[in-house]
Image (tube, rainbow, N blue to C red):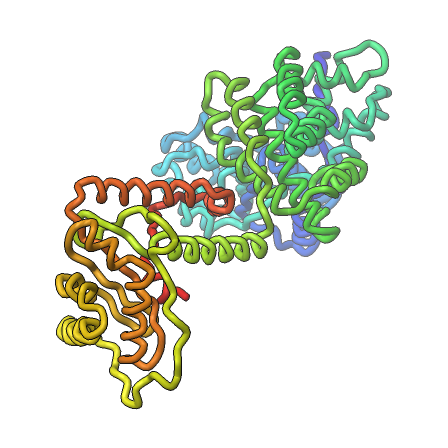
Length: 564
């Protein structure tokens, strides 16, 4: 007799034998017991979770000599033939290769005939979603009102591809992925039955690779059982399955969090030399950091990590020294480059590049601290910009020139309440008002400082508000520098204080014919912008929010005053 693989040899023969699908088997058991089995049933779910197996058990339950019964005897003619797959009244059809409308028409013609010797004629159509649209349409009427001796059972991994008209005529059962512990426990029992010793960590590895599929797990277990004549070692299991050991993943994650590039490159080289799949290694690293984040959230979320308790404890210890923000930053960077690694033809180079890049990025600060630092940076930029750009000489309208000394911007004398007029002027808000106020300021200065007044006659008041007066001076460099002198700014400040009743900041701009002034001003602003872009806090914000700097603005003194 040919060798039977574990998936066939130990295929469940009763509902009680089915692993971890009790929500389906219990409902079907009750339906059989109360005579309420539907004439069309759809089993959907991931591969290898028991869809066809449950359909066969249900067929045996309905056609058993002692049935319909929830517990088929597996000894009568019908049960034996269904188990062997050659029952005359149970038809297993592959939907992928029998998907034409002609084949469904033939099936529709045959359903009118009575079963040969069983109670029901049962059609089990696997991968039913592969039927063509005309085939589904040809099945509609028969599926809705079949003869009383007909039962249809459908199995599919992609229920969303089945037309709604078919789904509405079926009683649907959704099967779940089989849990990690259930897979491991079932394989351990089969190893005992086969009298083969396999380490528990190897069974854990097989269960993880199976991805919730019992058939996949038993297929891998079959392969593992043949790798040695005696007891199977974990090293043999790793080699035969081509899987990266969990210890390698854990050590690589430690090196990544510590920024140890040498250890990272050595770990990648070790996996590469063993001929293991580097793209699978990257996927394992990504999943490892996902597990670290979930475990870091607390005990309530630990159940969402599909690993044995011993490995969960190791992950919990690994997260002690790192915040959720740091772990999430690494996970985000890994996930962002996943497409690059998956599609590249040079996975080793791509993985090394990504991991080294992550090591070079500083850990992200907590969001509250980052917001506070950003606000501090904003205030520092505003304050610094106001002091640097307060007095400027320019070659064109409103163009600025780099400051020559702090003396270009001076505070006026402290206000003297006795010198304020009882009826202070209002701050002008329009161009006409500014011209009138400026003419009065120049006239007042002319009484005591005629030379300064002569220079100011060719000047104009550009900005006026409750905190600052901005004056643009026309003329050559001599005239501009004369107005910028400390004594001149103090004199203008005294007159402004007398007219408006309180001290205002006086800012002097120059409108110069110097052809190099504009370039000097531009170079100065570029230097300020580069300093702002190179600030560590700006880099932190850009990295955290995955954004980019669109523009950098150097605030004028007036804008600085409004921000304050």
